[in-house]
Image (cartoon, rainbow, N blue to C red):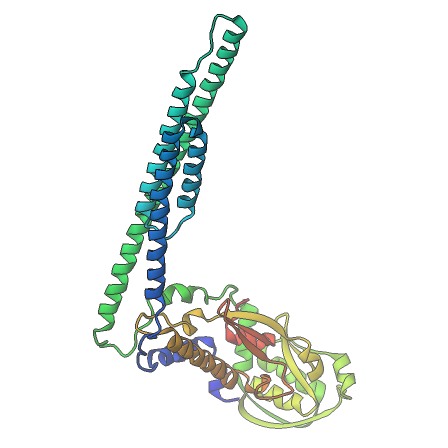
Length: 397
């Protein structure tokens, strides 16, 4: 394996940042902008609601004027109109609040008229039973009044909160509009640097920080596999070669006896290899490959087993690449952004499969267990590989 194949994910990140920086020219915005039609429809809907508001109020008051006994019916119509205005989203928030306040005042006015009308028709109080009924009625009215007052206060508090929310929303919208204009103005200024990272690149990069750091034992194993050694084996027994490699690397090498039996290899099987300053990883792969064997990292040791068994020892982990694949820039249209994101992801995958254990990926070797897939929802690479490759990619879970 070449020196390039020993690079880990940080080197890949640096390469991809340069790829994103050298992306193609800015694309023009999509001319099929649906916003004018949407705004026109909202305007027409708002006009319709205004008409219903005016017509409904007029009809309610005319109903009371023509027949004072129909106050309850008029109040019901106003309450239906209140429900309509509360559910509407075509009106501006400030206008909607004005209409709601007006209708609530109308309801209170008509309810007051109904109370006055009832008071004008009080029965003769000379009868004691009638007086008792009147007292009970007055008590119910007082209780109802307190309840109504509580409801009014609750509505007032709710209205005040909605007004505050509307002001906050208006301020946020104004800030975003100003921010967008500033971004457009800045995009018109030619950039003097070689490349510019997105504003939220640092924040997104934190998601890629290793969740699990490499243990000292894992670091020692990876260092030992990178260490260059010289070897001259001429019909040396399998067990002698393993002992030599244990001493040369200072790491524990565990042999799977059942795997040896499956491929008809014994501890006495002779091995031949002449190596001068080759990495321990390369020496192991050459020695074991001739016997139908391979190795994996298991529990901080170098575990020698068969190729078939090694394929069953792969694990699946995810790697966040949102800061590398996502392009956020008001100068770019959505179509160009998706194309550039796809190109960036293809570059990431190609760098990984071509530089980190190339023969361990299914795209390069149909018999290899390694697979890599991108999940656009979580913006992560889903990688199925051996523990050694995962450690070379950074050791994140």
